[in-house]
Amino acid sequence: MINKGKAAPQKEKEFRRADNRPDDEIRRLRIVPDYLDFADGSAYIEMGMTRVVAAASVEERVPPFLKGTGTGWITAEYAMLPRSTEKRTQRERTQGRISGRSQEIQRLIGRALRAVTDLTGFGETTIIIDCDVIQADGGTRSAAVTAGCVALGLAFKKMLDVHYIDRIPLKHLVAGVSVGLSHGRLLLDLDYSEDSEADIDMNVVETDQGELVEVQAAGEKNPFSRKDFTNLMRLADKGIAQVIETQRDVLKKKHVLFMAYG
Image 1 (cartoon, helix red, strand yellow):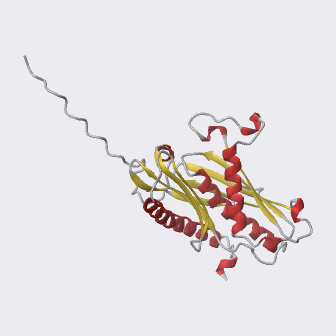
Image 2 (cartoon, rainbow, N blue to C red):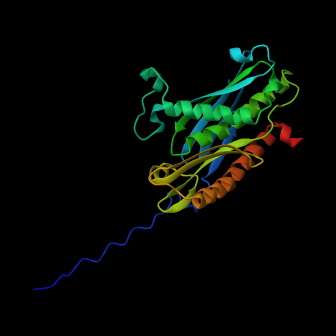
Image 3 (cartoon, one colour):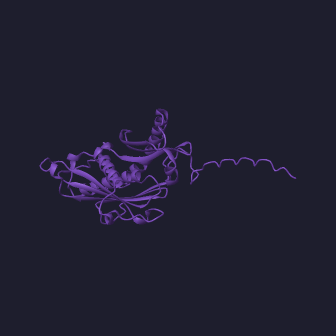
């Protein structure tokens, strides 16, 4: 009788990122300005397989609490198209309410854009940034902030061209990126497969000066160390610097000379 003995232990398969990129590299990034013909400003962004369209609409009104102040307002709406995901997502309007997630993200976008804008620089006017996710593969809120900033800059350029304003009141650029601990490694710009398995999930929004607008961080399974937090912030800094450089190049080609240019 042959003694088969114990089966050899299976070697754990080494984790590889879907696009074989290094852990500290963002996905392929593309921003297309003026993507929509009828919006006052618009931008289409691709971060890997994530695709978002941001459109700015200028309306000569402000919320009641700003009437008579001479101050403008920037707000945002966020939605995912039904087939932006692998399985159809029901439209929120058919459910009669906006999900908590969508409310959180659209508030994040609005806060980020207001933080880098001189709200007294365009009178009692509201700019609405509509961010629609047409394909979701992780990092949609970061992509929405990034595209929203470009759409806002282009809307200000149009307002400048028709002499509605006398300068572009955008003080700085702002962008976002996701980072996290997934498969035992610290990763920059997570796609969905990495995000869904993450032990630490983090979204960071920063200006072109490296100033923080928002940090959302969660230990999905266990508490995490300050060392991991610091290392993830370094990754985010690196990624956002690259994203902002792309924003800057796109806006310069469109002659959007915002306040930080002097």
